[in-house]
Length: 400
Image 1 (cartoon, rainbow, N blue to C red):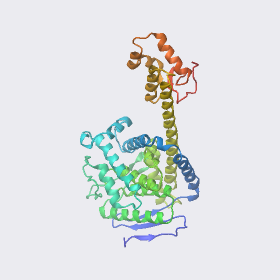
Image 2 (cartoon, rainbow, N blue to C red):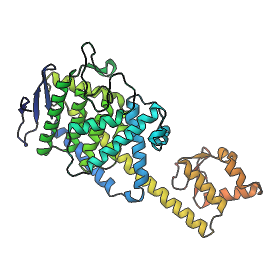
Image 3 (cartoon, helix red, strand yellow):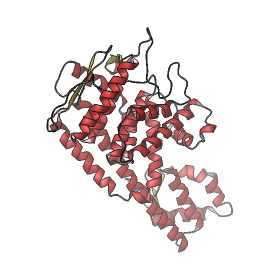
Image 4 (cartoon, helix red, strand yellow):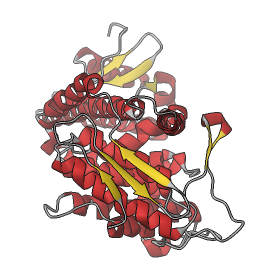
């Protein structure tokens, strides 16, 4: 580290910089590079949303929420990098024993799951700090047993003569040539670790530090493959270690839904820095904070819905126990609730399980059962003849 030239401003300053000289790539500048005043309100919105989320009844649905977050996050971060599985297929692959994963796509899912588990253990360790060893561990987990002509899990890239790595595309602001040689990459990763330490020591907010580490890590692009997935895990680990629950990993889904902006901002901020424009990194950090706010708000709504479903299910069981509804009616509500959304009335009437309930009963009994469920609002029928469970009231309901 002796040959790294540092220009660290005082903790009270608006910018903290670190200039690293490399042998072949040339100088590389790490800089906070953000308009702190412009980020104050977005950060406050994120923290307010997280405070409300943290006081919601998470304990009642923690396990289910955790699984949903992991599945959605793995799907998001994997799809960004070309993964072909659907979200349902991703969720199913998560349950496979690693020895059962015969397909490459399944292996990609299990690898990311293992990397998340490693990251989450690190985040709850009071002594954990960002390090090159941690980056290599995450990379090794993410790319284990995946075919690639050059990549070796956990090993820093060292381009041979004539083999040039480029990042980005013309559709997202242009292509960028990151450092090509292992010695330069090591030096820049050491600089990134030292610079992040200085940011933390100066009290720079994690909602600024984490995306900046993500951004500069991707500019260094230290491995042959898996850099995007590793960068998002690094960002999530720093946020989780700072006390943000669930949202840091779920943020990958936001990046997927706004993938063009996500990719374009790397180039936009890099070019702004090359032109020496003021606060070149503001746009990327602001994008990250908007994503955190949207993600936390979505998770909060999801928790409320999950708790509502639990309370609704409890009410249905109580009505069954008190014989206010019969076993057939309870089965109908349970089946519709399990669908997670509305069921067309015509489809319900054709469903084999529904038909079997009334094999020895007439149409009047069937109609009476459904009418009773609507009268006591265990089911709603909307104007499009869709049946909704009573915990979700559609905008326009047909009278019972």
